Length: 361
Length: 152
Image (cartoon, rainbow over all chains, first blue to last red; front, top):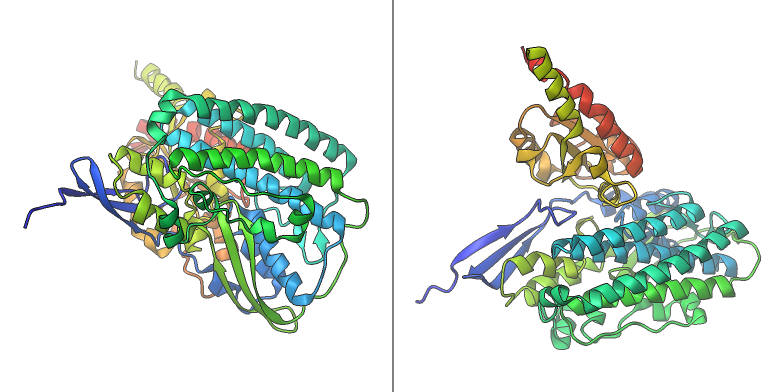
């Protein structure tokens, strides 16, 4: 039989471009990658196991430490799951404040993902610009919630802190600044000839393949699937929301979807601020027993919590399905297959925005 | 003559610090705060700190995360690869105490000082980038000063 695989090259687990440990084994013929295998398990901490049997007051803090990049959405989905078990409705002002904080977190996450991609294709200038914009977003998070990462802002029946008028003024000014800068960087990415050479037509995921791998989030939306859990969220319905969709399905499309979602997030925050009524931010309520499967849209895609609580509000059973599981699967089975060189393996992997901490918990 | 050479070495070593970081099972929070140090606002490189992820050319190892069992031997391996003089700094609560993950039934094995010698630690969940830079800058001159004399 003819020998088809020349050499198997491991990439990782510690790689300068990756924030987290993961190993990809690439089977290559020459420079051409014909198959890959992702090896994980370096970050397994067993969070779901230590969550069981604890009251929601403790599980809340454990839930946002599943992932440090998108900590707000883990907090939000767990709290909204507990609210839907107990029949608690947050006051309208608190619901809009949740949207503001969630969209700020999404912007921080997308800016970090695009920074990583630009850093991986060695366009360090654009990467550093984006990382600097991220600091402005984190400043706003700190101003509203009191912390940069792991904010613990939402609680059943409301949020912890109100948005003061002075904060709202600074937030609007920062949004204007971000709008201007992000438009400039999007144009830099869109029209850069060298970026196009490294990104266009690399790591293609077609619509059929994306459906087969159950890709979610920006990875699916770049392949033409309009899937977004925010369309089902009551507050987002009031604000008015349409998912961003592109059809190319390559690295360029995935990064451009994130850039367009940054613009969308800025507009969502502006509309939320305009529609936000005055009133209380905490409505109260007691967590009851029951079980629910609740989904929300994390920056990387659909995040699902299955929660089963007893009548004192203690979590009896919990299961978390994070978006990166499907996206890493889509990446290793479809995107990386047929990539023309090993140098594109890292950038293609980063373009699907994998979060290993979410994935292994 | 040797004094002058030593002074020169001390001055150079405190102004050119190569850093490697290793993520031994964190939640990404401390990880991205180390990454945020690279941003133009904090600008690590103006202090002469360079972030490589290569232990063979590093002086300081930043340990992040609560030491999962998979990392026990690998962390020691990375520590042995770093050339002398070297120091390790624990970033965040996780390598110090295990933070929220150090409960019955979890798969973590903190503190990091069980596995490798830790020279300093920056507690916080996560610590701010300014605190991380301050720790590196205040540790490096004291560890690397008069290294040859201390070794004798």
